[in-house]
Length: 414
Image (cartoon, rainbow, N blue to C red; front, side):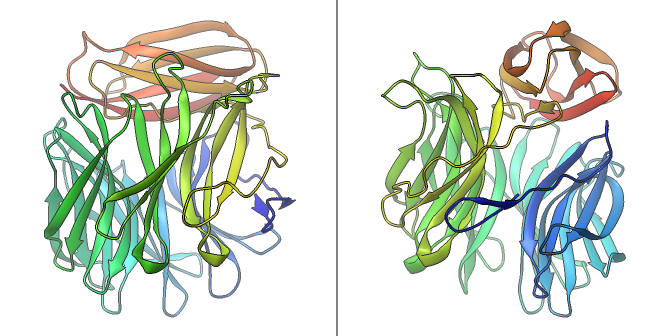
């Protein structure tokens, strides 16, 4: 979807084949004025270049898995990072020029390693992600390579909590980076946002921990003028509301919380009953643009695309309601929390009433649980999955309906 500065839709497009899994993770405007999309298509890590009108220019399908982020290096070279499920769930780094793979590298040989973001320098690439050292011991992971994808060093980070997963990384100065992470552990730190500050060698400078509700997820981070840091994501509302709410949190350059704003439900009739942010970026004049979804409570039409613009300084929303776009195909959302201890929420959307099957499988493809099998109405649905009797490790949640299939990875920890 392309929108103007007032939030109005200019055009919208869909890509990929019918009845296969096609998802976009991130998008970048190139120096030529086109847009490069990183994601997955039919279980393969995929790069798609489109022009300013949204028309495809070229598509490149790589190893099994998905791309999560992309940067542009000098000479129109594009570097993608993500996860390679065909190579023992390893971190995946690929250089693509004019739609052709120039080089590719895989890192890590454990049960669940993947990259989520990257940043380029004059002589190398910084890549962040998550590594599961023993399948149930998750740490934020940062590596540095040269411009040919050859490893220089690798570092792991974990602060206080049992498991720390990295969502995104941004440069904070000429001397370092900050990692926006999720922390899962024991009370009182069930789910926490963690900012991990590192130097150019990947060593920890400091950490700050900020409590979220029991179910929550940090999805992105940006750095504004004067060094202000903003994270976005979603968390449960108060216990009586027990539903997902989008949030943005502002921090000083050293990680001290300045303000926090949650959206939905509103006090004047609960205009939306649920929602969340999945990404954040800078707008004009140091403003904040957060992107995600919202569920309308009045007509229960399901999940709607959501874009909100915030004024700098106090998180005040400056863009009102604009046209919302409903998915035309079923959608299986990321489990929350993930990783989880015993229970997690599984959410999905159906554009129309249909027969569905929602099941859980182990890493060998064996079905270990059937959570729903039958006719389900259109709209948004949430199921609480209790895995008390399951062993720790990685599992796959699968939604099937009339030839459509979508899969999400989930990690059970103790």
